[in-house]
Amino acid sequence: MKVQQLSVFIENKAGRVSEVAGALGAAGVNIRGFSVADTADYGILRLVVDKPEGAKTALKVGGFTVKETDVICIWLEDVPGSLARVLRTVADAGVNVEYLYSLVSTYVVLNVSDADAAIARLEGRQVRLISQEEISGI
Image 1 (cartoon, helix red, strand yellow):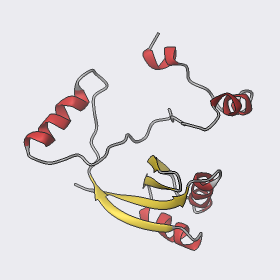
Image 2 (image 1 turned 30 degrees about the vertical axis):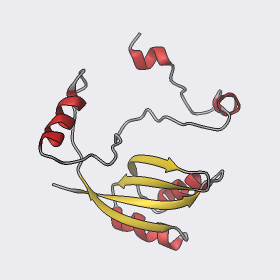
Image 3 (image 1 turned 180 degrees about the vertical axis):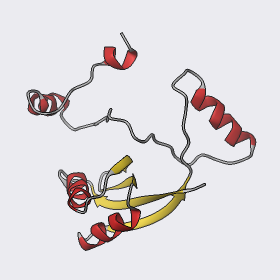
Image 4 (image 1 turned 90 degrees about the vertical axis):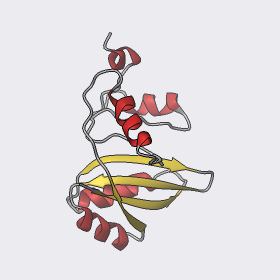
């Protein structure tokens, strides 16, 4: 069973990921998971969405370059060692994992150029900031 992933090639500058998310939202497409890999000049935004064809159309209309890839999506039990067991099974088959990321979580990690400025802007808005203690279950 395979899932369709969209890779969007974007310039590494402020607002580009927001433009992609906005185009998808305007098209009624729900993002179920994502990952961004970047270099100094450009990035690759990988997306799994509920409506891949609608997303692809909306992004192309928005001027974005989009590539489709079949990927595998698995469910993991939320206990220590679950990911390791799955990855060991894949490795034992002689298959290399090129990259991985998680889906359908309301926790999103942002690595930004100025964390303090971003936090200051987000506090008091309709965004809940998550602490390390909350992630740790403390």
